[in-house]
Length: 132
Image (cartoon, rainbow, N blue to C red):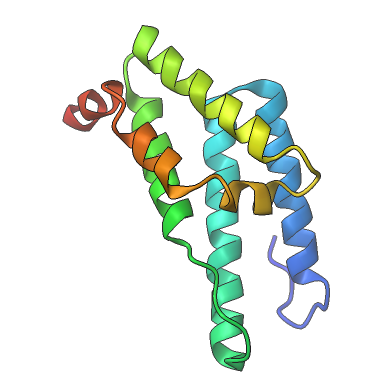
């Protein structure tokens, strides 16, 4: 269900929903739940940047981190189950739980850092997922 564009708290409601999706992942530990949360946050950033570009008064949010994270998580979810995937999934979970301690999952996710996303992408299990 789409909210009307004129709805004044649209962004706040979507941020809150992003927090709910993030908490669902933290409770479930399922990569699918994390992928849903990341995709939602990417949409939030994209929509926010569209609004910012119209006004031109504040800088846009860098969506490249979220886009890259989404790609890496997608590859990780396709990787065969095993020690390496489990290690990468555990490392991802630990980093997300640490970064998203507050009730603001969206900002926590944006603050995880490019180095971590790059490291996650260099895990040996990910190239195997690309071959599938």
